[in-house]
Image 1 (tube, rainbow, N blue to C red):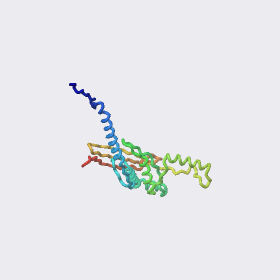
Image 2 (image 1 turned 135 degrees about the vertical axis):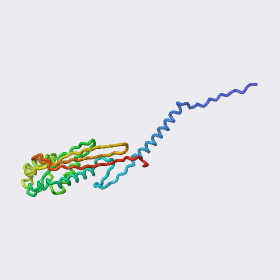
Image 3 (image 1 turned 120 degrees about the vertical axis):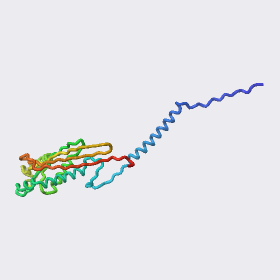
Image 4 (image 1 turned 60 degrees about the vertical axis):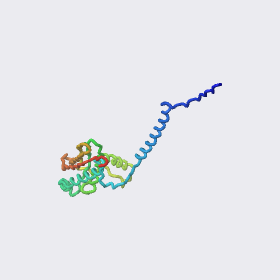
Length: 224
């Protein structure tokens, strides 16, 4: 008898480590794309609310617009209550003395927009009517250029006269300093703003003022 022939069927190919890698890589890339989309969506969840510009809002404890405004008002109040104002007014026959707000130096390690503070001081001074605030050096340059242009192009009845500026008798200047102390999540920030009113003719300081701010910052963890 003849034996039945033996049929040899090809074995199915087995997936080795190299064959499984493309599939795993595709799955990993898909997961990364899903996670990235979720993170981007969460990060773009921004909410903006308008608040009163005059409100006091402290987020980091650093110098802010409220500090600038409140310190300016405090220093101007101190300056106008000092004896120099009555003497200066009497010397001018009852007229308000003229002054210019000079430079306030930033002696801290943080960025403080002293230009904003100077404008707050000017606004507080001019609002009282007790003094005449003269334009700053930068502003005078632009004004003089305009006045010179008027001499050539403006009519005689409308042009500004030359050599008729109001000179400042006093200059108000000062500086901002800060001391910071921190331990763990707690921090104390101390600001000291010093100001002096100087007679431009004699260099005498007719008034010296100071205002201080102290802030306590506690960065608590979530869940407290």
